[in-house]
Length: 159
Image: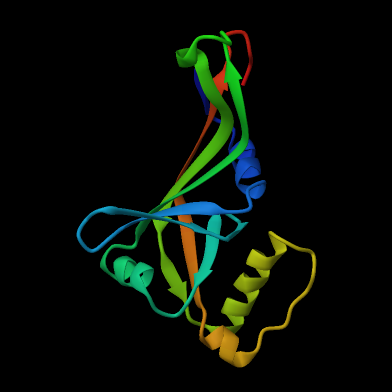
């Protein structure tokens, strides 16, 4: 099975927009990887996430705000030879984004970004109470690097 790099930014963005969750890689305080699934929004080369106002993720990000965020869609088991285990692969497409987290503190901007996140999941409109907005940590990650790959293609398949 072959793996192909996706060069087209619109195709990479399509992968991102078709995911219902992303996986955020952070470095913990001991220098170890820490990966957590999160909901997100995406607009104009910026990923938006949200969390509670305190906790271990935020402590880690205060120490090192570099993140790697991954997305994956279209998972399908494929094989070249049905009876040969090593010929099996998982057909999928993935995107990976790197950037630095900053936090949005302005209340109106938080509401705007929460709308971006919610639009990723629903067309409904929402109101946010003052305490709810004050108590949510809104993350923004301007994308510094964006890559994509297609996995599990047979030799004669095109990406």
